Image: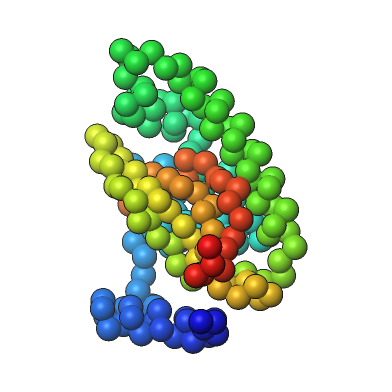
Length: 185
C-alpha cells in the first residue's frame, strides 16, 4: 500500500492530537545544566538536526551532535561495562574505534544525502532497550523517519544509540545504513 506523504503526516498529527493532546506548538524544554554542550532538546530534535545536517553537508553540526572525546572518555566510558577497571579495555582504543567508524559512515551518508534536494524530518524513535547508568540513559534501536521530495517517506538508522543526560540528547556515532521506504524489506 502506497500512502501519500501528505496523508501520512496528517495521520501522525491526528494520532498525536488524540493520544497526547499535542498541537505541534508545544515548546521543547531546553537541556539542563548537566547536559553535554551541543545536545539536542529531544529525540525528535536530534533526528531533525541530524537529517538537516546530512542534507546540508554540515559536518560541524554533526560533530556537535555526537559525543566529544572528553565526554566519552571522562564521563560516559567509565560508567559503561567495558570501562570497568577489571575489564581492562583501553579508553583510547574505544574512542579510536568510534571515530574511525563514525568518520567512514558519515562520508557514506553524505553520498546518499548529497543528491537530495529536499528532506523533511517526520519522527525519531528508539524502540530498543533503554539502559540507565549513574549519570545518563542510553536509548537503543533508534531510527529517523523523514520525507524526501523524490523518494517519499523513508526511514534510516543514522544513529543506533542515543545518550540522554539532563534533558540533552547526543549520538554515540553515526551509521551508514541506507534509507528504506517504509514497509520495504
